[in-house]
Image (tube, rainbow over all chains, first blue to last red; front, top):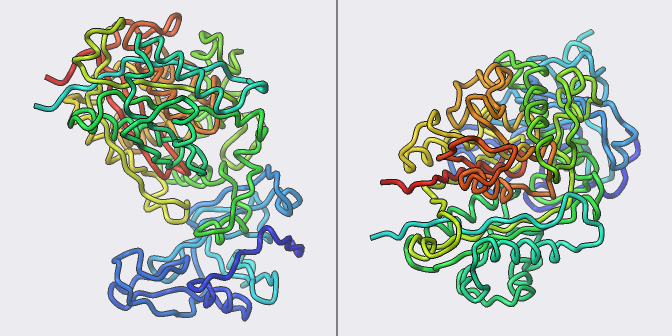
Length: 142
Length: 383
């Protein structure tokens, strides 16, 4: 998963710059609402929970739990066609309110479980963009 | 007093494979056939609704058909767009803003893009896609995430999901225009290739070409036309999310709102529904909406479907034309549901006729379980 073709590199928009800058540094930056105290990902200019525009950036712990997952076994677009089979998980971050969809490249498909603890892993793509993957927290501990 | 609204014309274009036709030709063909079915002239149509892929599609369509409508709806929110159109047209006709609305759709998804919709689509990296597409998630994968969670939470099995595909294929066998008509078994579904766990190839809808048109008008006009009027008893629409990461609850859709609202306005209970035309993009879409619409309790969709409820002689004959899973799915299918519901209520469904059908529900799903629209049609109006 080292190749990063241009068509999967997102444009860094104004509301997304903090997130991608963080990812390049190896930090998971997410937004926290100072009004309702809930977190959100992806970045927006207002809180999707309560609607307030009182957002601040925090560095998330990178820890989370798999809310659900799938094993992608068929994909027609490069580079994903060369990745199959691979796990994509919907991760509930430790910071309440925030969820992320992420690839789990180091996890064997048969080892994927709902509820498994996971941690973020950063995959550089360009000077301005890095992708946030997740891997099993147990594997990290071991 | 509010005017009552009826479906008076419903027709399909050629399909499910039409490499020699353009989407616009399919739309024009379906529109012409719907006018003939209704026994109406083009000049009587003063409203148009359609959903496409941008570029003022609906305006181009009106011009192509030679219409200058004074009511236009281009709501384009995925496969359920047409239930949104029906809701909007129903209210507008009821209120007197417009008298006769044609809802028209056609697409050559198969001939133009092949079978890339579910697993080979290149999404433009704007909005949430900037964060989702680079993960390698696919359209099928989004549904798979939801299905996996449902299995975890409620013990739903792959065999129960498979039984939905099996029953709908039985209906397709009765439809000469269906893409796939040979019977399948639960084992065959489970042995078909896994596309995105837990969804197998045969849990996924077909990709086809095809078009459809439906014409709605006032009861007053409908009573002068050839067919018995089919009444719009109610409609409701809603959404929960765009991207699957923002879906509030992976095991519940906006149908949990649209169903109760539509059924209450129609004056019916789920048990009163004689036939259910459900957007079966995937077997899971059917399962979760059976629950959300109240045909069974939350978590009971698996056992309910596997009991044979969807068969012609079952508790809730579903997708009697063979659905998107076996008959036709040209990119978006919501309009075909209204067409089949109308045919059933008229008693025109041939070998797949549900005897004595008086109440039919058409339920569209769009995006990634994102947008939902419910329409209740009946042989009688709400009294």
